[in-house]
Image (tube, rainbow over the protein chains, first blue to last red):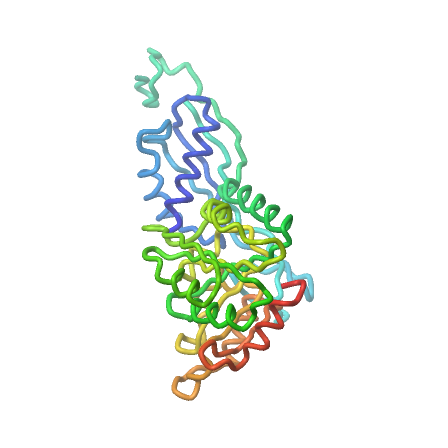
Length: 109
Length: 231
């Protein structure tokens, strides 16, 4: 249940970035291969936001699909889980996206 | 309160705008910066640090006890992570190494700041080896860089041979995978070849070292790996 720690980081970063204003919305990018569950993050966010400028703020989670390039043939592979195979049979993949864990932006009142 | 958007501004009409602040900040940046400072602290003292991760009961502490006794020249000290008790640190001290226990309480993993505090208290000597025994858990610890030189994942033949596919994040981040309890292989249905294949499917270049921490078979391979400069 590392999502509580991640939610606390969302709150810490947003509190630093909001200049004391109340935060209405925070947009967070979570890669599908990042080992963070959006539902668990939402649950923890509401707890972590209590008595902070983020209390009551909406949490928008933008999920980023996993994509990789095959190191053997250069083909593109879509990753639905943290491993996969290229059509050529190789599992030696360079991950291009899907590991994102980022606070993108805030909307402040 | 603004009736349109619910914000605390007192505007009779909704003529104010909501400012958008672009941040683009990584969620693990705080941990990453402490991990980087741990890494610099360790490399400045030529200390090699290994982050040992496994499910509970795979044999991390037993492996460490044996390694400490067999490799006095490595001058091993240990940071022990568990939710509660200092039983493991006591076992490590009894084996002859310095150890500090971190109790994470409700926490399911070690993070870089816990290791930073432990390093200050433990003060491992220059040129020594540091073993960080993470909390037994194949999920959460994989996300947190501690400043280690390498990650070692320990599995055992009493677990399923499909563990690497079930916990791919953990196995993907490993520099080496130790397969422990090989002495029990005749009594369990565990396919070492399938395990290795699964581990390499997730992590194509990972080293897989079968061994038995209690009986000693395969430990020479582990000790050789520990001495490699790239480990």
